[in-house]
Length: 199
Image 1: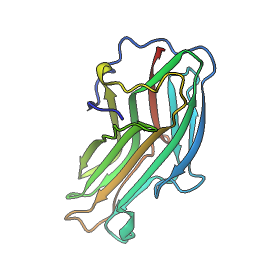
Image 2: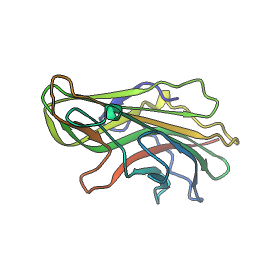
Image 3: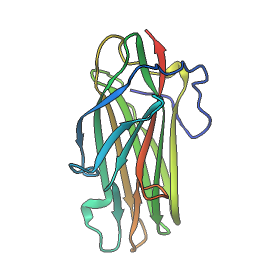
């Protein structure tokens, strides 16, 4: 699991190895959670092998007004197998999240994420908090310092878990507030970027 993640700022992985030229593919093992019912989330590699994108179509948490009391918190866990060329390994260096948000005055929202390899004891998480009033797009970025990168074991295929959570509290407001992972162009997504090295 990643540690020492910070909010926004330039990528710290300055000495990144060029991604392998061989094919890198993803197998989505499972997708679970109230924020990503079956068929509403997918993962695809970026064409330059620098990472992957997770797209969502129903990932939204809401509270206040006439919303369902159970909708204030939504979560999604995506379990992937990343198939990489022999002689390389990777770590998660950065993750960017985009979305839309409407918070009434007195309302708050939270985006939480963590990442870990199968069998890893590291399972820390990173929170990004928001306070109303706010209406528009939001973005959060998790960056890992080079010294804190957690590498996939060389020569062993281990699944990678990406857990995210969206949460809203109406607070003193009686009107509806929400947060979603929906970008300004209408697409819902997360970009996860790799750091590469040779084994």
